[in-house]
Length: 319
Image 1 (cartoon, rainbow, N blue to C red):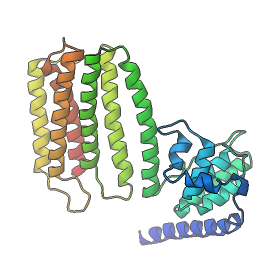
Image 2 (cartoon, helix red, strand yellow; image 1 turned 180 degrees about the horizontal axis):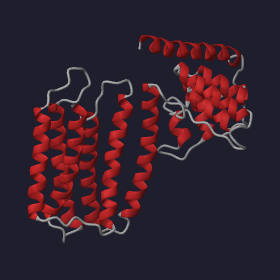
Image 3 (spheres, rainbow, N blue to C red; image 1 turned 60 degrees about the vertical axis):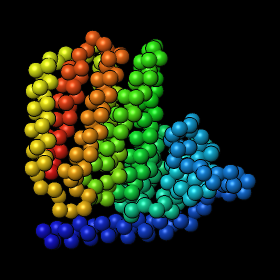
Image 4 (cartoon, rainbow, N blue to C red; image 1 turned 120 degrees about the horizontal axis):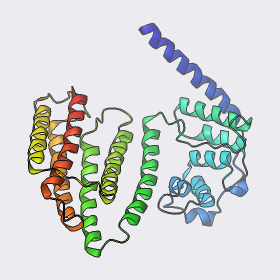
């Protein structure tokens, strides 16, 4: 076992050394001076975010502003993408490789980027190759950054879907949806912060993924209801679902809390459960406005079953 571990370390070290040697050559390149922002432009970029400008988060993407902002903020990952992909500037693989080496990234990430850039340059990736800084995301910091970017883009797309979905609703229905969405977001946030193991270096990525998954599930449920797939549970169905929920909850309570920092504790689960109860109640209130034919116990049964599945999965992970 120790020999295998030593072999892996040796391979990683060799890869890092090769990447460092290659970077020594690439760092001889320089950024084209005419592409840099003027002093006046730089002064206006104090609060800019190159990631958002490049990906079009909260605004339409703008590659020129993204480049200027990346220079102002030393965001070499964005500069690598701009020059490698020929966005707002001509393709320049020498500059892209230099940018990859100047980025504050893990050695294996840099090595992967240089390999990808080499394949692009030699035509092995087709006539219009593209590289993304998240292609080789393996470190905890970069994973968190990339999940944040993806979450923001997905949130924008999700918002568009909500707007289209409720476009012809009455004002009362739209107001009820806004209240429900606040509860849904609070529950998703609580779930991501309280029911995800935070002991690893990629914890921020896992939190983002959990929040995103819950937000997606909320939208999917609403889309299904709008398509006519409404819950049709009876009062006895809810009683059975509630019983199963309590069993799952007690199972978690009986488990011993993790003895390491970042593990999910029962106290945290209790806090999330309170947010979930408010979320379920919000669905009942919303249902009265948008789907008056559906009984309150049908909503409770539907979302109780969903929550029980979450708790059972959590219990299995804590074993």
